[in-house]
Length: 309
Image (tube, rainbow, N blue to C red):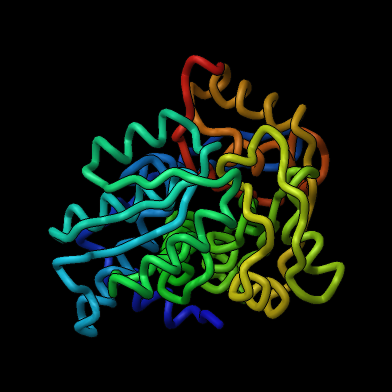
């Protein structure tokens, strides 16, 4: 379980290593005021850098980070980029296992950062199994993409910044894949703001976990599967969601595509489809704010191919 105290500790530990990202006012959308938390401006283009630095810095403090073997992560993109970047900044090697389906632009960035990239298998679960085996054999620090206390607590820094920048925010909308960012934000804002997890209908990890009373496997498909394609919600994210009363809403691929287009055309904001899912909840009516409700939408990643606009 992750608490606000753990998030605050992580935020302090990583302050010199991550960006304090801006909050942009969108103006009124109908009857409610809207802000965008521009976390896509974080190092490596997503919130994942926060958890990566917290995990590695904690491992270094505990004497667990071997400079010869470094770290290993399984990721189709953003988590791999973040951990490779953090490892490079701390001067240790990074090995990243990715499925064959990983977007080419993200794989190229991994090589550019200096990571050793191992591709194989059709989905994240296979990359995960290979990464865990590598960690056991080599002694590398294993960095889970979303389900480790240090990873979730680090991601929760987004929520602390939202509360600092907009203290009277009522509701925070955030996209959910494995649930690390949702869990971190819910822990950091517990008792202070409502958190709504937004998921593609094609990958309903949080929705299914809440319905079954525990994380369960779900099919993975759809336009946002490259970043929200976890097969099941993490145990930590689930525990925080249930403890804090996180609400889950679902959106279609059509609305995710439309949200991404509108963010570009209306605000000149470029994000990946997974990040646009949070905004899609408002466009589709999956989440309907009340009159005067102050809403913040977390735009969590920008690692997209501009050619696909």
